[in-house]
Image (tube, rainbow, N blue to C red; front, side):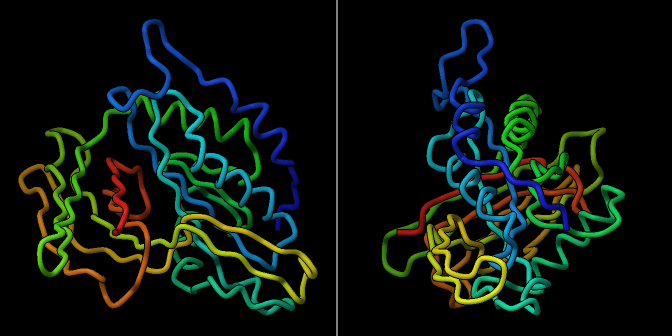
Length: 255
C-alpha cells in the first residue's frame, strides 16, 4: 500500500483560492459543472484519515471554481483482515477499485486512492493533484443528468439522462448510488487503534441501473427508499464501460 500523508491544513492552503477564468464568478451555480470524486478508503489504513479529511473539505466548501464536486466515499474490505473490520466496507467497492487498477495500468489497488470523473487517479490525500484534476474535469463537456424527487404520496425518484452526443463514446452505463451524509467510528484495533474517524458521503449502495448510447437516453422511476436502503443522498452518474470517463453526474438530497 502507498503510505503518503498530507495534513488537512495543507489541503486548505492549496485549495483555499479558487482558480478563476476572466469574468467568471466564484462558484456561482450557473458556472459549475458536476465533477465526480471517488475516494477508496479504509478505517484499517493509517494513511487514509488525511484523505477522508480532504474529501470532507471538498464536499463542505466546494473550493474549486467552476466545479460542483460530488463526492463518494467507498470503503474497501481488503484491510479488514489486518486487525479492524471497517463497518462501512464492502467487497463491491474493492471490486470496483480493481477495475480502476486495471484501467489505469496499476500493479494493484491501494488506499487511499482518489479518482476524479473516471479520468485521473492519485493518492487520495494529495490536495494539489485533487485541485488540478477537479479543475480540469470541470472544463469537460458534461451530459445533463436530472433527479426529481416527488413528495406527494409515496415518494418516487425520477432519473433522466440525455443520450450521448453523436461521434463520441458508443455507450455509457448509468449508476445509482445511495450515500449517508456522515458516519463516525471509534477504532479499537489495527493501524488506527484509538482514533475516532469521521467520514462523509459514505456509499451504502451502488448499482448499474441502465445504459445510454447515441440513440437512446435513460428515464426511470425508483420508489424510495431504493432497495430498502436508507440514505441521505442520491447520486446518479453516467460512465463509460470498464470504469471509463464519467460523462455526467447529479446529486439530490433525500428528504
